[in-house]
Length: 386
Image (tube, rainbow, N blue to C red):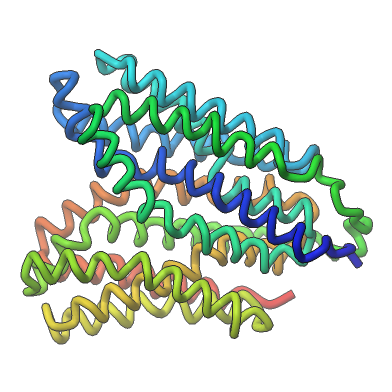
């Protein structure tokens, strides 16, 4: 058995890591929504250049992820996460100084490196190294906190943009990394052996089958595709279904609270249920919501957003808890890096692919993501508990 840290210490670790991850998400994944247009205008470019650079950053993060996970497996996550803060700050500094597409892409490439080292996968691997198979609760805890990254990030980016400008907003986020997130990560336990762990043969059982790994990689890729497609195009989709602009925006605002509410539910009532069960239920949420949207149109906008958000909230946790439950803690970081690499690449392409479908098919484009959601549910049903 892995000794449990005192509850107070566990809570402090979750709070520190969850807050630092909130900064990392808010200053990378969520800044294009607010800063892309002024950034492009400031350099005399189309915003397509900025979103293209952002897509490249996600590909970079997919390439770096397995290495970062292996590093965390070997020496713990504290050093990797602290390095990510320095890299994020450097990339944001490059963006602040950018005056040409070359520097723009260089800045986003550096931020992509930070994303590969410092987002959820690294946080999950860090907790697996500290708590072993007891990491499910802490993993849920950090997603509860970081689930507010857009809630915090978008207004803060907008405030800095309105007060100072987009370059200063990038500098502001760089300083937040250096003076808030970096010290928080420095408070994490040292190394992967911060808690004594038994030999892998005792804790983790036989090595995972390739079939199970491929099935789970597909589930993660499908989940990220649908999540990113909806994040980019939800208001347009709901308007195509017949909702007014005001209703579409209000319904979209429900996704964040629905995600957090579902994570609270998972943390409370579902914590004793195998993560495979909760993941299967969550995977069914988007297809069910899609049927309701097509059947009832605009009046179903709020229900669609709530169901999609709840399912997405639990599936985000599943990206950390499923590999742990199915394959164990040994080699967890590198395995999670490889499992999520295809997801990052598809995530980069999702806004473009679904945007083309929405333009061509209108509300019927939802059948694309519904079909992907059903396929991911079938993959989860094919996985066996261990």
